[in-house]
Amino acid sequence: MADLTTKFLGVEVKNPVGVTSCDYGGVERLVRRVAEQGIGWIIAKTVHKIDGPHRWPRPFFYSLRHFGNDLKDSWVGTQMFHNMPYEKWLDEELPKCLKTAKEFDVLFIGSCSGIGADHETWIPFLKDMEERGVPMIELDTGGPHATFGAVDAHKNVGAPLALDPATAAKVTKACVEAVKIPIIFKTTPQCVNTAQVALAIREAGGQAISGNNAFYATWIDHEACTFYGVPASGGASMGRGWQMFSLAKILETTCTVPDMPFIGGGGCYTYDDLARHLMIGCDLVGMCSAIYSRGVGVLSKSITGLNDWMDRKGFKTIKDIPDLTKDYMYLRDWKREGPYMQEITPIVPEFDDEKCNRCGLCETICPYGAITLDKQAGTKPTFDRELCYGCGRCVGDCPTWAVKMIKHDTGEIIWDGRGVIKDWVTDKEGY
Image (cartoon, rainbow, N blue to C red):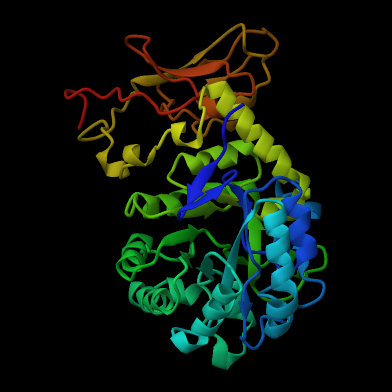
């Protein structure tokens, strides 16, 4: 069995899987529910004194499952920051949360939000939590929830604070200098200059970064011909599909400041989602939306799956997992045909007669109408090279892995649907 133990900001964590800031870190009863699943860490529900985000529309979760099976893990939510009075949480709930976290050997990370860049609205939270034994604190500067729910005078909270490097640095510096425990800055996927924000956080003395928070969203009920839930934008889960964008945003940070510890998440529902994040420079990986969509058991199932995957790959420790950040590049740096793409594609599909089940999916989804399947003849699919673009769509969609992309002239396999496509372009063919 693999050793999942890791370290984060000098603290030993029994495994890298945890729960990002949400209800499950808000009160002891819910902390216990997820701690029992074997997680290594949890971030508290964000505490604050902002007017608005403590009052959630009820009901506040609007699942999209009834709008199609492809939306089963998607939902819009108007839940915001902690709904409990801060003093009550501090005096009654926090001590119990810390005690339970210690009982289950779970790293408990605090979370707070001030108002705008005014450091005086941040520092009291930090000092209160530090005095009560919270080992590190996340600055919740990444979420859209409070931005939409706060009164006009307090609306400069959440994501706007993580969009501008100078503002991010100002908040981080003030918080880092106020306490002795580590400060984690939470980024937002809405930011278009994530790399600059990461550099600003490091320059300001931030000890770690976390990301990604949710996007904002709304939904339309086509049968009722109205908005769905509340007629406003709130937070949202897009399911596992959200992960593609989230991974790209995380890489903007982990490739820019690889020396900074990073808590990653966004669309993690399964063990392989956790593995993906560990391979792009995340020290810890969080789950959140998956728990709401699939229940707390998704945590233990994913941790077990991660362990099994490591055993299967021969990774004895977390450090053995490959670091792919060094391989990440700009698309412009990948060698391609040139000066223009060849009119007749040199890369074509090859269909495996034994693996093909004659389902016809490749013919249906081919964007260029190049593939034909004669179901009456029972033969494997064929393609028209003059129509084919060599796009590879058929490879990824084939349910039986019966398609490969090959170089037409040599038969060399360029892509079999796993890993990176082969760098096949010669100096004569392009640059």
